[in-house]
Amino acid sequence: MSPLRQRLSQPVNGYGLVAVLLSCIGLVVASFVISLTVARGSARQFCDIVVAQTDSYRQTPPITDSGKAVARRMEALRTKLECPKEE
Image (cartoon, rainbow, N blue to C red; front, side, top):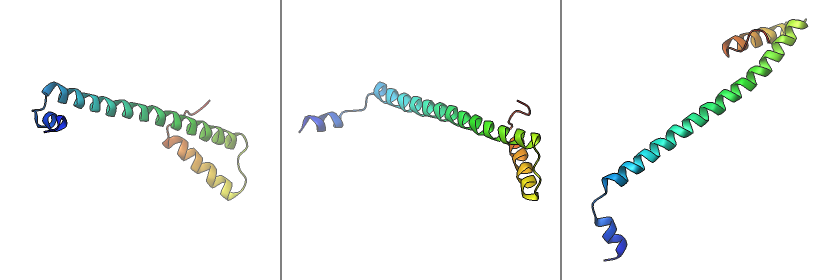
């Protein structure tokens, strides 16, 4: 019998299994935290764009109907994303 087969036929060490499970859980938690951090940064950058656009619309209101519709939608998006009201 090969050494690998002998090793695989032995009972599983409980400590080794616990170590592997804890490592997997740690990796999942770490990747979740990293993805949340990146998502918050992206949302903040998007908020900066929306705030700049809506502030621009407030300073120089659009004249056309389509421009007014875009301004309303941008304002609604600013509210939905909970972007700051005034900069």
